[in-house]
Length: 312
Image 1 (tube, rainbow, N blue to C red):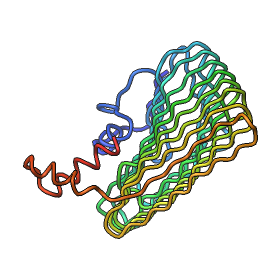
Image 2 (tube, one colour):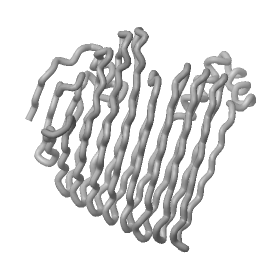
Image 3 (cartoon, rainbow, N blue to C red):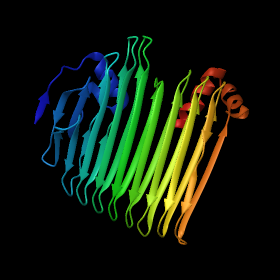
Image 4 (tube, one colour):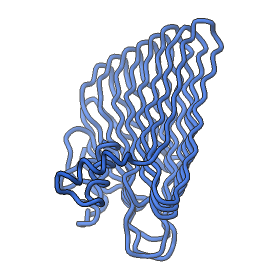
């Protein structure tokens, strides 16, 4: 089914390329593009069905067992002052192997704040594999703020695997990020979060991984850069309730007058839980800058090269 409710503008297409790698606003597999609180495009496949909710704003995505496809569900906002809360639920069948590309882009050229709060809930079946990619980006030449508050809730059944990659590219004035994952027996989750803040932007990230099943695994990798007078606060927590393995790694680069707080926490409620955490905050090393400058780069170009590599 192909449902076209709104025409995509050049601005929409540019945002979709930035947040979802959708060249010309197109992608293979199932697609649902949300634009300014409406549906711009919806494409289903034989194995992936997308149903609009009737009680709240959002969609249900049903992925059949054994499916090996991709699904794109990006959001674009181009109206200043638009504020929305969206609930998307994913039901991934046993043995499926899917890539889900989300993300939100805001183009705000007005004086009012534009805000998107998205709640994504994943139910991942036995032995299913999911790669979930979510990018956030804001732009505009007005005075209105760009605000995004994503919440992700994941339930992994026995043997399920989730690779979650979240990125805040630029232009988000305020974000409160919440992530919670519950792992069953032999389930595994790997979360990589990348954050870039500048100006007076503020970013809060709270994350809880519960390793409830025998031989479950959880890994968190956080990479962040705080520039100018921006503020970041990151609290990842791994809870071991069975024989399991958990690892939290937080690395941050601080610049200008920025502030960063990183508070990794591990809780062991089983004698066979193996949990590790580590955190590091520091500025760009002078020898790195010098090495690149000797190759002909200016100090600004060298900094940019280092930061791009760090957040890659």
